View: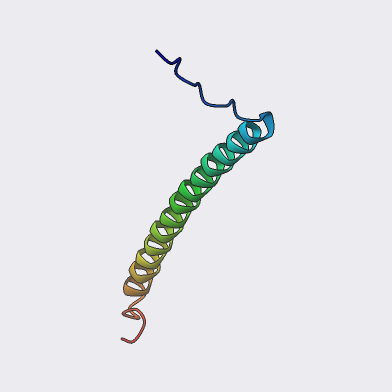
Length: 67
């Protein structure tokens, strides 16, 4: 009967590189999610500002852009 061979342990620098890569991926995903939320908030604010301006124009009797 033969004794099963255990795999060679990873060198410490490989483990550190894997950990650094995982942290980079996690940070990148977090930044992308934050950027997506910021873009959506900016788009929503732009639409709201447009509606406010349109309401003001209508109230002033201008009818808005192109009227």
